[in-house]
Every structure is written in structure tokens, then in C-alpha cells.
Image (cartoon, rainbow, N blue to C red; front, side, top):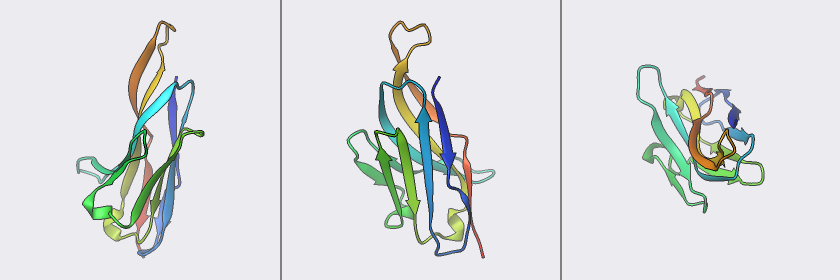
Length: 125
């Protein structure tokens, strides 16, 4: 069974920086797209940044120029470097990983999309 473990959230002042990490553990054949989403209470989850298997990146307009997504394929990990943080960046951040793993019965493979457990980012004085 594959699991995602997030880390790196916390409290930071406006203008500060944080780096989020999301590591996938378990038997994994390959990882396709990876991404970060965020959600405020009572709001829909929104895409923040995505990175493809070939490391093409895309960002929400609200974070362009401030956030950088990257991945380390050897570690099955995706990162989100967040700079110049604003109070409106406050949310729970979730990683999302599209991967190929063996089926539980070992009879072939399965494409699965997993979510991390979420990590709180609070930007405040």
C-alpha cells in the first residue's frame, strides 16, 4: 500500500517563506503528475501548482512568481517552495500524486491517485 506523508507547514509572517514536502512510500512502479492543492474552510479545494513526469510546471495565477514546485524522483517526493507569503495563502495544503503500483493480488498494475493528509499553512503577524 502506498502512502503520502506531508510536512513543512506552520505559522509564518507575511513576506516569509515555507517549504512543503510530500513523500510517497511503498512499492511504486512510476509516478506521473504531482501537485499541490489548498483549501479554506467552507471553500472548494483549488489547484496551486502541478508538475508533470517530464517536469513541466504550471501554477495558479495567484501564486505565480512566488511559489515553485519541484520533484525528486529518486525520493518519490514533491516540494512546494513558497516565498513572499500573504495572509490569503492561509489554508490547508494537500499534495496529490498520480502513480502506478502493483495490484494487491500482484496480478498486474493499477493507476492510482492519492492525496496527502494535509498540512496547515498560516500567514499572519
